[in-house]
Image (cartoon, rainbow, N blue to C red; front, side):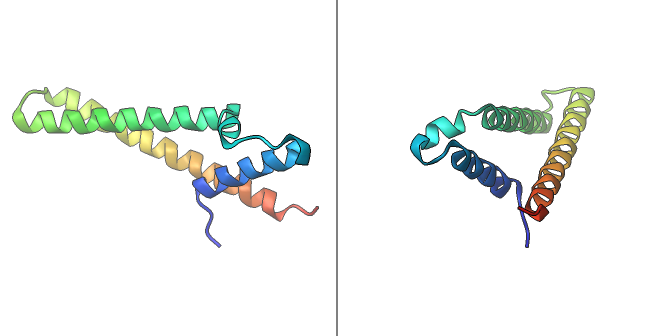
Length: 104
């Protein structure tokens, strides 16, 4: 069984709904405004901004409008961001797997 980060986040959201009980069902907008989901959204936007900046630098390097050290720094920053995202994803998946293995 493969578990990706999106499924783990959905499972977390479903668990929040269950914990609220049948009388307090919230809309999907309220669930996505939870602090955990806001943190995930903020992190995803940050990664997107870094990747967009890196792509812009790469395109500018083709026309000669950027210095080599700026391009190198941008690529290194993008690589660090990708490694961080992969590490966080792995931790989330491991945590989800540990929760699934727990006995009730």
